[in-house]
Amino acid sequence: MADTTHPALDLLKKAHPPEIASAIFTEKILHKPLHLRPTSPDPNSQDARAHRRLQRLRKKEKSRRKQRPKPLSAKEKRIIGIYEIPKRSQKYEIYVPLHRMWLGYIWEILGMVKGKQNWVTAEAAGSKIASADFHGAKLVVLRAKCVSSVGLQGIVVRDTKFTFQIITKRNELKIIPKNHTIFRFQIPQPDAITGNSDVTPDKDISDDNMGANALVFELHGDSFEHRAIDRATKKFKPRNMAEL
Image (cartoon, rainbow, N blue to C red; front, side, top):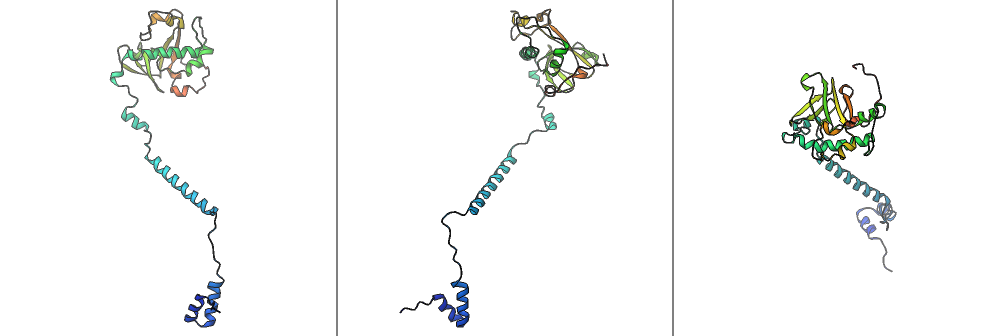
């Protein structure tokens, strides 16, 4: 009958006494559990793999975000002159079509339609006019703290919080402060413009072409010191004006 002694036990008996060799063999080899790899993947290992993948994606997105250019600050915009109108663009005829677009915009706001005599009241149109955008409007300075600004008229090319920047017919850019200044603007009837053959889309609309029924408004700059984007969401309420 062949000897069935375990080879590890024979090796241990050569290095240790038989009793110690048997104890080591029983504890370390004979009764040691054998861990087999499962046939299905371990759920914990899958979670760890997904976690590592998520960490790689977050790191990649973070590095990509750092590479994106930061928006310019207000100081950097002033240095670059991003809002300045170049000299070659300071021409009155360039902004005449903008004024025509503004008329269509203000007609729609006030509900003025062609083929009808349109009248508006201060109660109905006051808040709408105050919330309107004045880029493209034609303003005339009636009163101002600076005497040299009285009588200036032109098309608004920029409406800031404290100033109106207008282009005059002399192709000059004028910055008019709103404070202590009263402006006037006219809104012609739609029929006076669309039904007049002398007024073309590229031709300036003079006061003579606006007709006798044009709506005339006065704008007090002291109560109009808001940006156009802020006025669109601001609710204006009628109130007494002490300066009047």
